Length: 311
Image (cartoon, rainbow, N blue to C red; front, top):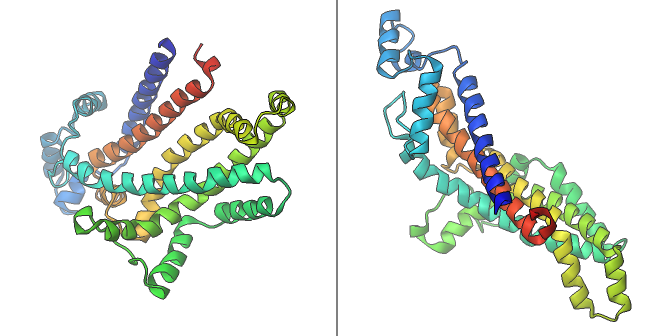
C-alpha cells in the first residue's frame, strides 16, 4: 500500500514540476496575445488594458497559482483570445484523440505480443525472419508518410475507407470505425515493431531460465510451460507498452493532421498560432497527465506480475 501511495505521489509531483516548466516556457513567448486580438496597430495603452483585463499583467507566480488552482478544481479557464471555455474545447477534442490512440494501442498489442512470442518460440525460422522484417519496416516508415500511403491504397484505390475526417458514433458504428481504421494503423505500426521486439527478447530470455528447463524435465505440458513463460516475460513488455501509449499522444497530433481529424492537434495548433497561452498549457498538461497515468498503471501491473517489487 505504501509503495502504491509513493508511486501516486511521485506521479503527482512530476506533473506539478512539468506544469511549472510548461508555464514558464509558454510565458517566455515575447509576443503578447493582445497583438493577435487587437492587431498590430494597437497602442501600448490598449495592450496594457488587455493584459490587465485578462490578468496577464500580474507576476508570473500569481498567474501560475490562479491557473493551477483552477485546473485542480477541474476548471481550465477561458481562452484569452476569444473567451471560449477551454474545458469545453478539451471535452470536445480529447475523446477523439483518446479513442484514436486507444485503437492504435490495441492494434499494436494485438499484433505485437503474439508476433513477438511466436518469433521467440521459433527463433531462426521463417516466422522469426518475417517478424524482423515487420519490425524494420515499422520503425523505418514515418507515420505521416504511411498515412498518405494508406489513404492512397485503402481510400482511393480500394474505396474501403474514407480518405479523412472523423465520423461520430451516432452516424453508425461501422462508419465510425472505418473513419479511424487507417489512422489507427498509421499510428500503431511503429509501436508494433517496438513492442514485438521487446516481447521476443523477453520471452527468449525466460525460455533460457533454469525454472523452464526444470519444468520441461518434470514433464509439464507445453501449454502450461508457455503460460508461465509469458507471465514471467510480461513485466518489461508492460513497461514498454505503457510508455508507447503515452508517446502515441504526441504522434497522434501529426496523424490527426494527415487524416483531417478534429482532435486535440487542431486545438493545440490553433492555440500556438494565436498565442493562446492557457490553451497551450492545458492541452500539453492533459497529454502529460495521460502519459504519467499510463506509466503509473504500468508500475502497478509490474508490481502485480512481480510481487518482489512491491516489498
